[in-house]
Amino acid sequence: MRLLTGIAALLGCFIALPAAAQTKPAVTQTKPEYTVAGRATPPLTTDTQNLLLLDLSTGGRVTIWLRPDVAPKMVERVKTLTRQHFYDGLLFHRVIDGFMAQGGDPKGDGTGGSPLPDLPAEFNYLPHVRGAVSAARSDKEDSANSQFFIVFQPRLALDKKYTVFGRVIDGMQYVDAIERGEPPANPSRIVHAYIAADNPPAYAAGPMVAPPTALGPPVTLPGTGDAALPKLAPKAKTAPRRK
Image 1 (spheres, rainbow, N blue to C red):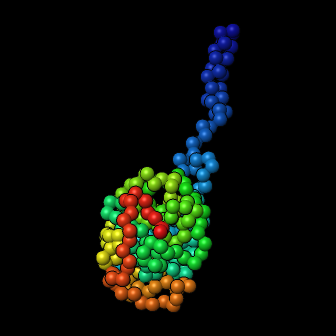
Image 2 (cartoon, rainbow, N blue to C red):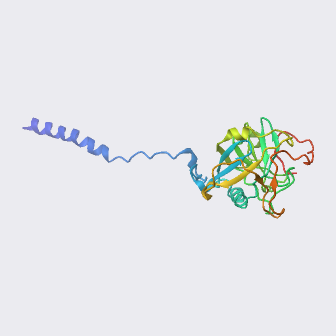
Image 3 (cartoon, rainbow, N blue to C red):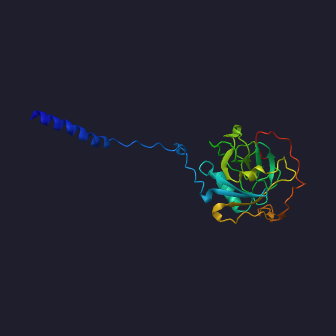
């Protein structure tokens, strides 16, 4: 009888083990890398409110994923100017092979900006890799306005010295085709700029129109280069600048 009682007790222990195992707390799943503590969550790459579309004279549409999580002021500025048609017709005035293409200047020589005030620096952790879109500025850190540059090849020396506010996620081949030069002899242009949420039309290489800003009424621009562009002084090949 004692033997049977002992066997029953032993079996009871084995039967109870799985139930006990179920009471252990579940392993907590680690957070994805992009949700590092202290960093805002970036928008989805499908969020049309944060997709900038640039129709270029080089033959197609470029899609830029905007990053308001790291550069909210610059992103808001670009959205505002885009919706004012500020960028329509502007040329890429400084394009260095193996480095970057710079545009967004209504004067076309690197000295201009929008009628809006300059912005404070929003230097962040995003690197200046291929396709990165960053705000051009003068020697003063808090001088970003309307000009920007798109990186051809990584230039990590610029990290945390310029405000990266987006990245090309489609159409980089049209950026690669931008005419080189400082300034280019036959500069490539932004035909139209749109925010994807505004239901823009499909790409069409139509006539380019200058921005309807304080600079004056819209005027149709030729598709060829401006011979009257002033020559720029020699510049270092390491940093996009506003004069």
